[in-house]
Image (tube, rainbow, N blue to C red; front, top):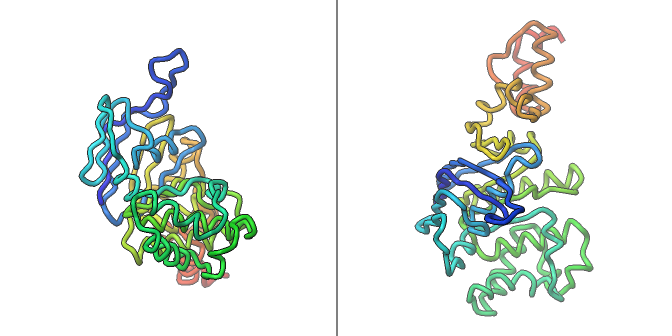
Length: 288
């Protein structure tokens, strides 16, 4: 399912003395199967854009097209259940939204809310639980008896159980240690590939954006100021610094190594593993 944002503007508390312009003139195309990372400093408008992707927010100007549904500014949209079923959002600390007495009931809540029978919802819950790497034995446990990492996986399973076409991730690894972050991000990437999902990742991690995404959009002061492939985006570190952003660790190391060795590797490497291989093949690698 394709998603397209055309010249989107959104104002919080529009028409009141507290009106605040959050984003303006934002245009983004997200074709089916894309893995898009949206990066930008705090307050740049990333999360506001994210909430337009399943019509949690509706634009004060511009048009959002989600599959066959068109959300037009000034027109009150009704019956958006189909959109919210197809576009699942995993917010920061999703485990804070757990509330049922058992894991099974929590995961089943979403599908049943969309009209799925209890028996079918239970089947979907078991499938979703498997996708997040948990065993069926936790289904009858209280989610609040689980570890923090398990609780997060249960909350994610609740989104996956609705079988969305698009998965939107808002800082999904917030608060996790490095191992936990990698496990969760690898899990999402596997789901992206095996289920043919479109994935939109809002992140502060340049490493995650470089490693997983095939397209990156930069938000700055409420506008989408640049988009491109990870190599296109991270090959201009000076431009990123001007926007208040960093570059992946591998790019920082590559720039430092090239200056010290007086050698250019010819392209920008976005992971430490690929950079190490390139250095080993280079003339400079033979000097080490």
